[in-house]
Amino acid sequence: MSKFLKNPVAPFEVDPRKPIDRILEDMGRISFQGRNLARAFQVWQNMLNDDAFIFFGLAGAMVPAGMRKIICFLIENRMIDCLVSTGANLFHDITETVGYKHYIGSPHADDNELFEHGIDRIYDTFALEKEFEAVDAVIYKLSKKLDRSKSYTTREYLNFIGKQLGKILKNAGIVSTAARVGIPIYCPAIADSSIAIALAALEKNKDEFMKFDVVGDVRETAEIVLLNNLTGVIYISGGTPKNFIQQTEVTAPMMSGKKIGHKYAIQVTADSPHWGGLSGCTFEEAQSWGKISKNALMATVNCDSTIALPLLVSALAARFGSKMKKRPLKKYPFK
Image 1 (cartoon, rainbow, N blue to C red):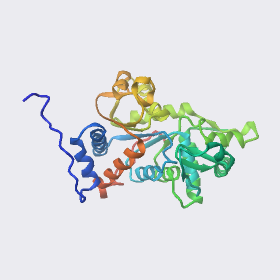
Image 2 (cartoon, one colour):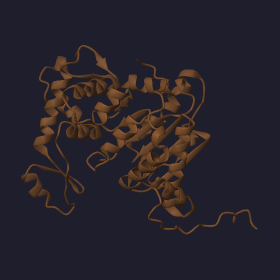
Image 3 (cartoon, rainbow, N blue to C red):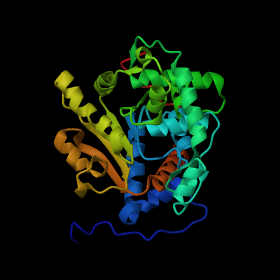
């Protein structure tokens, strides 16, 4: 028989008793994005079993879409080791941490009418502008406790905010859980978010504007790569977090002379590579830059992240069960 015809497609068998991890495993014998999702499940398992350092990039409106507790679960159970997020997701996380909500809406609503009622729309999700303004005030008030004569990496800043939230609120969120557990969060585009809007609009004294050491972020994440020889990446929806994590494998060799490349790579994206945008670019393209190692285990799932992420993490939880939380904290270039 031809070497191309060794593995027949296996029609998916419906079994109401089948656990979610078995479902994803069996999807490895079907086609299209079902098989890619199954491969992503396998690659993530390999990262955990090989005790790789796992960078997790979070973009898109994932928190308003209901993905917040999934990220908290990943942090709490040591299934990721570093979170890189858009500022918007972190702002929306703080919004829910202080007790406000995002609401089920409709993409067909009259947006001018929503504006008149002070409602912001994120596709089919609604939020109240007054509540966002209240969260701006919370962020500003907490930030005022920092010494404004110093500059801070976004990791230092978000760790401080997370600890403050953990002291005053019982409703755990992404930022507060990461601060408690010791998982770093970086926000390379913090200026492109309501966090920066709060810090800029509410501060009247120019001498007390927050100063962020974004170059320090770049150096720290490159040092993480150098401290942890085996690294993996997971990208949800691409964006700035994806590029920020990818460039660790460009910065680290410039600092050390060693070319490494991430050994494992998963991305869930609805973008296409042929437009030239990074969110849709392939891992093969990244290999041309040395960002992904030559022999990396890779999986790309062309799918809405709100479909793929709940399935992947639920399957991992089912597969690892009591083994979760046993991964020790990794090596970091800071205390």
